[in-house]
Length: 323
Image: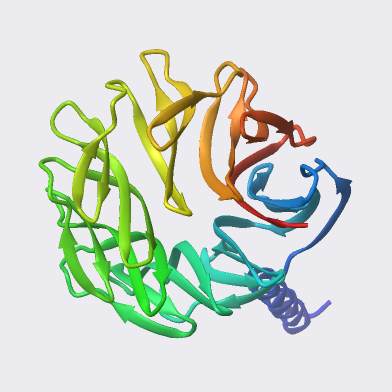
């Protein structure tokens, strides 16, 4: 075989490899895993879970059916008028993507990272960072808004009517927690505050996190602090429905997983449980996470547990609709 032919074959193999690599980086649509239904939703509702089913294996469970999202990290889940929206990062280039009914579309912006998702009237709102300097940003559909503050990092988004809220931090060596309303920054009015979650409805905001040198759990309603009565509590999620305020996290020296309804605490019965997300539907509290020494993935409806029948499953997103 001549030297020129050898180099020709080498070049051909290189082209094939590049095409294959490009295809793997761009082919980000999701599909059925073939593993069937892995849990049964409670009667009358459909439960959607997002997470993973093994290393570098993004997963979505739609009313128990496992869908494979491939090499993806899912960061947001929303169901609007029967359409399923998921945000995340995918592929070897870690590109920011929004999946609409499992079909992927890249988020605009060089180096974009998607950290959270909300959907309003069929429009996906994504929050994260973009650009060489990782500038805090949010997207309304394909329109990007870059936050003005230096070293802004936004990781939560919520929409209330025409108002877009993004929550996160500004600063570098010393971070300050707060939120943006339509791009205008408001600092949390408490010393040493650290924000964990935000919910907005009817022109009001609810924020949970911690404050002070002792890292006490707090709830801010319209930026007014309401300390959580459980001294050793950590609150990581908040949800508001029909004027009722729901929170999730853990409490006590033994870090018992728990949720709160208007300040009343309800403990998760399982040992070593850890809650990763909260949703409320028609007054029923749904939380997801895992429990036990082996980390069994599950969700709870008003404290009643349903396991995900997949030994590799990890769940950190939940959404619930009528079935």
